[in-house]
Image (cartoon, rainbow, N blue to C red; front, side, top):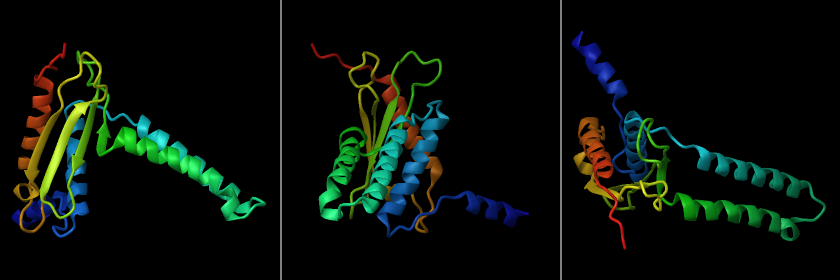
Length: 185
């Protein structure tokens, strides 16, 4: 009976390859999304939908360009324009964002969150940032940031210690919600 409980605990455990920083970042980002959603924030999928639409347009244009009368060097302008638009959106709007949200139901704030993360290559410092989706709004909170070593959240086997990570992320969300925006006059 105890073995079955241990097995089910291991099945739900999130395990990362500790030698692969993208695997670690993926597990942490996924957990952050779960934590933020569990706090009543609903994911805003508009930006993802725009990216999918532009990507679909790029694919259609690529198909048209493939069967177009002109050969590649002459028809590349179509691809460059739409690919440039997609890259511009990613660079200006998304940056390092992993989650866009609407404000929680029943909240007095009118803006959601933009949750961003960074885990630089060859570094163990994971930075999590929570900002307002509309920083110019009067109800926007001050941007808060947490930087910690990932070694504090993972065991030697690469299993995420979710309890510790949840406490840190929830504390960051509470800091964002509690801190009023300082107005510059």
